[in-house]
Image (cartoon, rainbow, N blue to C red; front, side, top):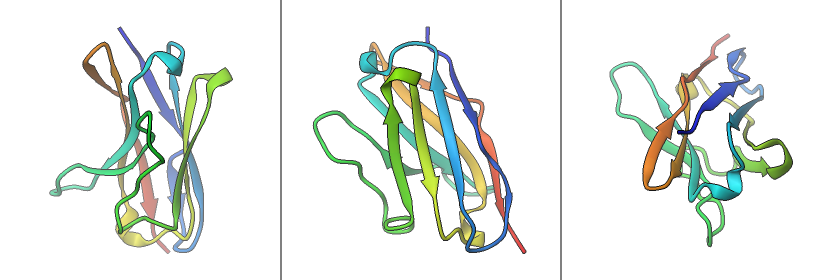
Length: 115
């Protein structure tokens, strides 16, 4: 099995920045997919960043230019750098990974953007 642990969420003012971390219990080289999703109350879960092998990172228009996904292979960690945060970015953010054709999710970390 695989465990994913997120951290870095919290309360931030509009225009501020946060960096989320997702640490996997095994080498991320063994994972065929890693990405970040978010879900606000009453809304569908949305993919906000991914690092699919064989392609460059992708982002939806809602976060493009503000969010950046990266990884540190030595630490088995994927990051989501979030800049210029807006109130509409408020959501629970989930790390997701695909390992041996099984999808795994972290527990989630709350991000609240408010003045």
